[in-house]
Length: 229
Image (cartoon, rainbow, N blue to C red; front, top):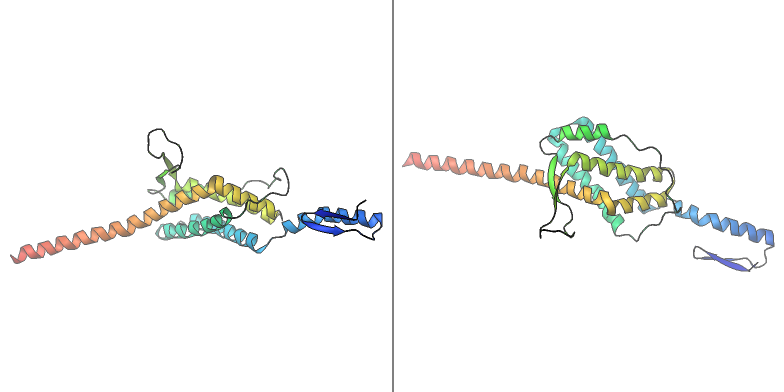
């Protein structure tokens, strides 16, 4: 048996140890790196907190059905969770501990929330977006696709909840890998499209109202001028 070995970047000196102690140290080293990687660090905890905050807020918005505040609150919550996604996106690729993804448990039933959101967003739920601004196309123009805020927000919530179940079960590396992978593959673009749609609703509500008000003021001024002639 050699006097030292290297595991996970750490060199273990076995000089002077009897064979049984050397074997025990090797067994300990095989477990210790996994346990260290699974300990939630500050970054993982921050992402988990943002994910959980988004999920709780989205459920609350759908349940309260307050149309006067829902768009503003959704804009805020989607913006915040996209910050977590951006932080994941710029990190070096996370690697799961196991070759195959462990069972994260039963998927939550989010259909009721989706239906509540669809009712809440009635009239502005459906929107059009560019599928991929850098993707190949056949007609020289970006591909436009129809989507709905209620579907996209629910899909984002489902992906984030999947990773959160891994995190709650202590599989931190698996959670980070899943959040990062699914951000790049799905929920990042879905949340970005939803954010653009929500921002557009706010812009139309503010700017169109200002424009109408300006037209009314101009018309009133014209009437005053006509009356004075």
